[in-house]
Each structure stands twice: as C-alpha cells, then as structure tokens.
Image (cartoon, rainbow over all chains, first blue to last red):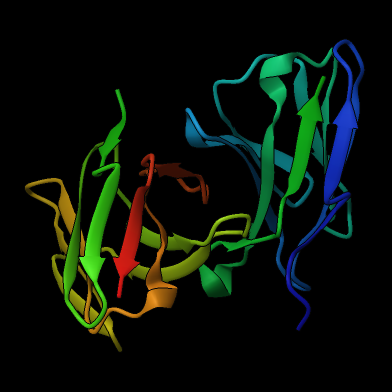
Length: 113
Length: 111
C-alpha cells in the first residue's frame, strides 16, 4: 500500500499571497488531519476531515481552511500569507482499522518571504 | 487547558538505556502516543497506550499511568540511529483522531 503523499514538498511564497497544499491519504483511509510544525510551537493541530466533513478544528485564524473530496484526498488553503505561516505542514491519515495510529506524510515545507 | 510536558533535550551513550518522560493534562483521554521524528522527516509511530501499564515492542517500551497523567518511553540498547526527536501526543475524549502534541524531546546518542 502506498503511504500518505503530499504535494508540493517545498513552496516559497511572499506575504499576502495564498497557497493550496494537497494530501492523498492511504488507500481506504477516510480521515485526514492537518498539522503545522514550527520550531517554536511544535506540532499543532489544524483540522480533521472525515468523509468530506470537518470533524474538528484547532485554534487557527480563518485564513486557514481545508476541504476533503469524495476520494478522501484533502486540500488546505492559507490566504493572505504572513511570515509566521512559514512551517512544515503535515498531513496524517487514519482509518477505523488503524484507530491506534495516524500515518504521517512527508510534509510540505512552506517558506513565506 | 491542555498541556503536555516533556524535556527539551537529552543525551545518552550508545548501548545504554534512556527514559523520556511525558506528563499531560488534557480534557478527556483516549490514548497516548509516542512518535519518532528524524530531522527533516515525518513522524513515525512508535507506541500507543490507553490502559495503565507497560507496552513492550522490541527495544522500545512505553508506560502509562492515567491517574498520574504520566507516561514514559524507554529505549534500550541505544544505537546512533536513535538520535531523533521523540514526540508525546494525547488523543482527547471526543470521536476524532485529533492529537495534541508535546514540544518533543531531542535525543542525542553519543558513541
């Protein structure tokens, strides 16, 4: 089984721009969670989607949004980028069969200049 | 509030044993996870505890005490490749898979 894939792996944007990141979960996994990882804050939960519905949301401003498609692929969007949005964005997928584990993708490294 | 604490850095010697502690205060509890993360890579799953006690998996063991809000990860026969960050994470009491992570413990294994 292929693992979780994320595209792009690296991205450089400037302040004020917007960005869309993509995540394809492991085949059969219906839950996709997004996390932001920075040196200062560690791994912080952004949101979780399950069967195309947002099931949980972290404490991030409304500039951060996401969605999930019928094939379980997920996208997250950040609008009006700020310097502080520079981070590693990780996607993780889970299924009822693997309730004990979240499988992480390699991440997208976003740099905002 | 929700809080997970673990030491920032630890150093140990190849072949030795190291214990990484984690204390947590969360609203609801549905399991505690340990992940390993090498620099520049994604976290990989190490262990899961939901009941009190010790779970052993090869060189790695994890312990949980729910009444004390405490867990530890024990690494035996340390190898150089064990140099990495170790992340403690708690799943809350709701139905989602959301994990709350500690800041991670950076472990350096020296020859």
